[in-house]
Picture 1: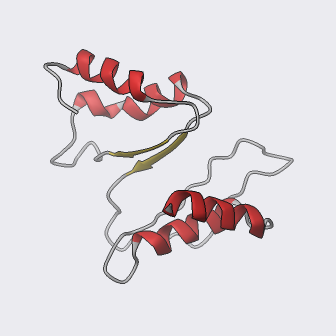
Picture 2 (picture 1 turned 180 degrees about the vertical axis):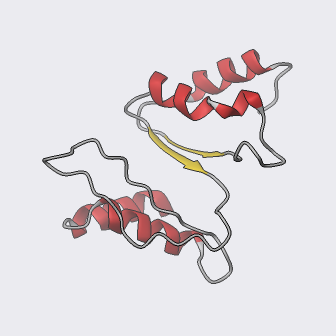
Length: 122
């Protein structure tokens, strides 16, 4: 996607998005070399403008970052965001990361997990 300026890029990007799309948005942390002010809040803008769209925001992992416990949304806290780090390496492929994320998103619904994996890997 090419454009002359940031406004034109956003307009073009937003005109291409449908409610059932999945967007993978690679971003960098503020201290990273690829960080830009324009991308700093793009995930928030996309989430606010397209609340029903699936959005994956990919940040570079922290060195030696391990998260051992996860919080799941449930009846008591239906809107807890699920944060799962997934490093893509030679040992941990994209397919393995998608399987792990889908399994965590639907811990008690194997049929939903399989459907999500099929949809994302298709």
